[in-house]
Image 1 (tube, helix red, strand yellow):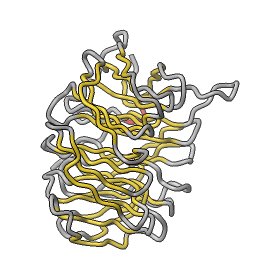
Image 2 (spheres, helix red, strand yellow; image 1 turned 120 degrees about the vertical axis):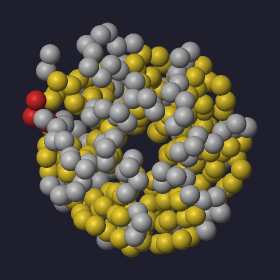
Image 3 (cartoon, helix red, strand yellow; image 1 turned 180 degrees about the vertical axis):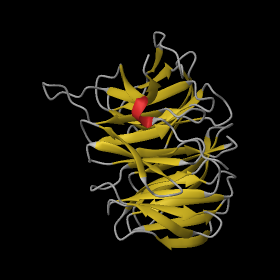
Image 4 (tube, one colour; image 1 turned 90 degrees about the vertical axis):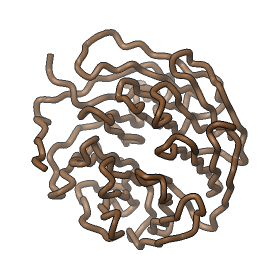
Length: 314
């Protein structure tokens, strides 16, 4: 497989403004045409993004939550359905075209993590009390709940949906069988808490970001660590693979986003930032990277912006 190198030096970022407070989460829909942003201002927004276009950007506001929208994820099979998780204990399903909430369920705690099973049938939600809830998407009701005795940070399914991953405060990754949630492996991944996880879209690897400032890359079939990425100096908050699985972006409180080659481990580009980053996510079809952080304006108020890197100069 001949890897095409991206001309990163010729690419630049665009800024998107709409939120009143900082943006916690950014996520692309399955066709790569829309980006959703979730904010401390209690709203989510959906933006129509043209990969090469310079047209006016329309956005739809998703209003209804009564606390911060901490994370959101799109239906992997439907380009206009999106789920949001909030500190108000609810999980809501929205139609991104109308901006209307079609389903909602109240859970037991403040929700901080949400992810769709790749076939679109289930949603997993994690809360601040280390409780995992699995929702049946059709009925929008919990079908499974489990409270863990350790700190659970981020959750993910593998590309086939047969394995479920938890990153923990103990520096481990717990690999569970799905749907039984029986433990298959406990991987001693890092010397400090594991914060974030990303699954390579091609299904070869997964990556883990840790409080020890390292990103580790794991072979999914062997469950072995292949290499580590060492460019960041602060706890790694967010990581994402590009759509070909050749590049990985990682970010922290360092004032840059690192983009490294997955196969060589070498940094190929760094995007400068003005603040700590909360969320980075590559588009599933194009080399566009959305990112959002704690940006403040000159009056030290939240800017409420996110940016997308990867546009060619006009």
